[in-house]
Amino acid sequence: MELDCRGLSCPEPVVLTKRAVKDNPASIDVLVDHVAGLENVSRFLRAMKYEVSVTEGKGEWRISAKK
Amino acid sequence: MTISKEKRNLAIAGILIGIISIVLVLLGNPKNMGFCIACFVRDIAGATKLHSAGVVQYVRPEIIGLVFGSFLISLLTKEFNPRGGSSPMIRFCIGFMVMIGALVFLGCPFRMVLRLSGGDLNAVVGILGFAAGIGIGSFFLSKGFSLGRAQKQSIVEGAALPAVNVLLLILFVAVPALFAFSEKGPGSMHAPILISLAAGLIVGCLAQRTRMCMVGGFRDLFLLKDGTLLFGFIAIFVAALVMNLATGNFKLGFTGQPVAHSAHLWNFLGMVVVGLGCTMLGGCPLRQLILAGEGNSDSAITVLGLLMGAAFAHNFSLAGVAGSADSVGGPGTNGKVAVILCLVILVGIACAKTFKKKEK
Image (cartoon, rainbow over all chains, first blue to last red; front, side):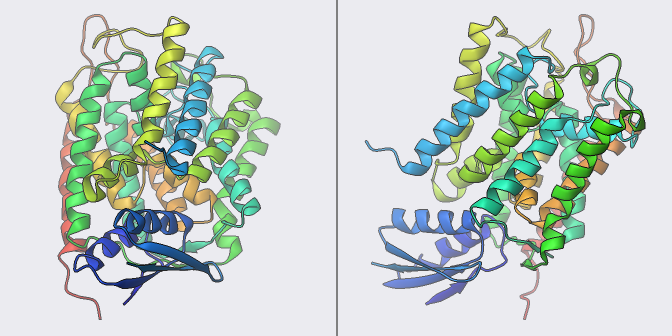
């Protein structure tokens, strides 16, 4: 599952992520384009017991989370 | 218990910011007003003659420093990221209303914390309103509220507000006769220019690095049960409290507080406007300045909304009047009507941007 949060201001990326992990998916990718979003979403996913890895693109990040 | 790196950094930054805030007061800023984004933007509106309230006119170098500090550090860390186009006009209007709410209370969320650290119990009423406003905003967020996506913008667009700030600083230092300056009242009280500027730069860097946000603390707690951002808030309070106690500036009570009033209902409702508006904007006035420094032109527009709101607040007597020995102070009829109108309009915007038809 992929969630495109590029262009959304705080805290929308993390609110959408929260909604997306409600059904407890085994993995989820979240795209963000600002550092505050990157940190918020990563922190939230870690708190939800996901293993989080980040790949950096040009001014945007892909947050990959797996259970 | 281990404390995460983010919490530790927020706590350290908060302590430094709390100390700097009190040092600014010791060096001349008004009491409990080491920093106040609302008051300082309002003073700049006065200095540039957008309003003519004689007691609140001064070009506050702290504001210039905050924006430019964030701009510099974000360039250094490659986080400068020009973006914009997420409902700029709505953001302008919300910024305008947030300023009216803040000036009815007499302070932005940052000053609310500083007022609390000076023993001003009116700030407790403010915090309750602030949290209530954030609660309402969080409800709309959880139901899908959004001001839409921002797009990438040019470097010129992103650097515009930082550049305007530098121009303002140069004019202020080189041709002060252009501006209006208070001879008495809060506007006449200020720390030396270089110190104010340095304080702004340092706090701007710290706030940019830690993403400190007064609204974010409560909002994340309500929405995500995550209190990380509250650490900054609490650290500023504790550091400023200790400094106030040490320097004899702590005075507990509702009455006789510097630049404050005790019209409880309006302190509460003013901060509901601020809490709700800032939650819709995605950050408190301080955070808007920092984001504007990072190249976010939506936040830059919001800052202009704050500036214009301040001008209107004083031109139309909307701001709260500080209490005195024979009066609790507070806003006049115009201010009360304005606060109610702001609340109705904010909820209206929130409904329209939450319960909209699905965009294709």
